[in-house]
Image (cartoon, rainbow, N blue to C red):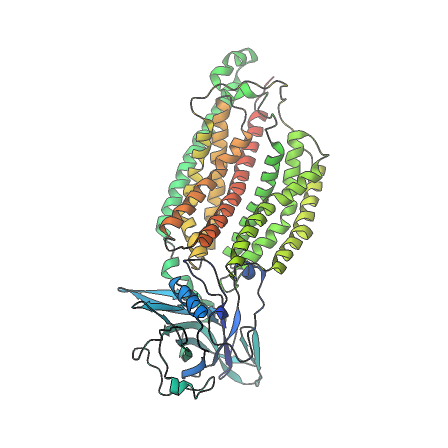
Length: 622
């Protein structure tokens, strides 16, 4: 909790310029904005902020707590070059936003659309007026403060800078907390004769009125003067509630009733399928076990076709090593998602903690390598009864998904480098990620693989025949069932997926992690049910190749997620322009869909494996 005394300095910070049209962030000082007297200084950022392309720097805007100031002059730029004019016009045409913050609160502005007033963070670089480009060069800041009564030393902390105010611990001191930060931008043409005589932070007289006067439309050779106003308003909003204005933004409001209705329908359908399945299998088992051996032999084909594949159901699948690798990585991704969302639901990763969500995901993924190695090696020993190649398998687990992800990100990073975007990861950060990968994830995965060799392999309840049983011809291709099975899990998350995509690509805040955790739990249940039902259907038609089909039955939801991403690109991101922006969107969407496939496919496979093992261990078969 940050507290300020009267007249304490407040420091406004600036972040990267962002746009929903290009999704390429650029540094604030790439445009001809005024620079602070002490020079540009970067604020220390965590891993998540760096990966998201944030670049937080100091700014020349200076306030003093509870001191209103009118029309403060900042600076006048040098004459604009042709190259700078071209860049400014491009940023304005691409709808770039300036992101500034005070005491970690982003500046919020209100846009009137008809009779509705919409809140939005940041303000535009400029606008076009009668084919002319005008720049925003005057800002009216409103800082909402909550006055409190406290005793002892008052510590005022600005972003990156601390101010300590000593007080009498025996007396009650009055202080202030920043609980709101609004900005009203406008474009004004300052008088050259007036500003030429002013120094930085001097007042302009008479005060600027945004409603009157000419706008600052520019051309090559012009000079731009910047200024600002600041006013403080006392508010009843308390510190814990200061983010409410951002989390209740119109664009990020969750349609609770619509989502709840969808979840209830999906849960109801899945429950019906599961109940029918339980009754069918249990009745089948009961009938079969009540018969004597002679009758069993006569009734086998009539009762069910799944008992006919008893000698093949545990036959090693094709590409068994790849399956073990994908299941191991899927366990790692699923564990990371569950723990991260659970922590966020309990409030450990609030919007005020910039980048902490992504940082926490990376750390969890690194340390969950031990679980991935254990599951993959133990599954491999179960399928192949071979412990000699566990090291190579563990290495493959440690490098499969991270290697693919790193390759995709490296290609996208080259695109960002070529665009000179702040979203491009510096070489030092890439090196740090590689170090974390090989110094934490790889050793832990190998350690998990070692534990997997020590654990007892899962014993099959039936023996496998030497000669594979011929699979009867099917009326419909099995891959149609596999692809169709993904529609039910997709139905549990497609509404929530819209808000997640909006928070990623439209710069909106996502905060309903408690509800997201419920959706995740429901998704796990539906994936398990769908995969088990499909596995049972394949066994009933004497198709014993259930291993990969159970994986892709639930993993096929990733296909629908990617198709939804394409739909979102066409209908929601219609303004997205440029081949680089489209390549970035598609690259990140493919990576997201691939990770979802590994996670949901692993859930379905593990549940199907347990089901098949339980099913054939519950029947007395000679």
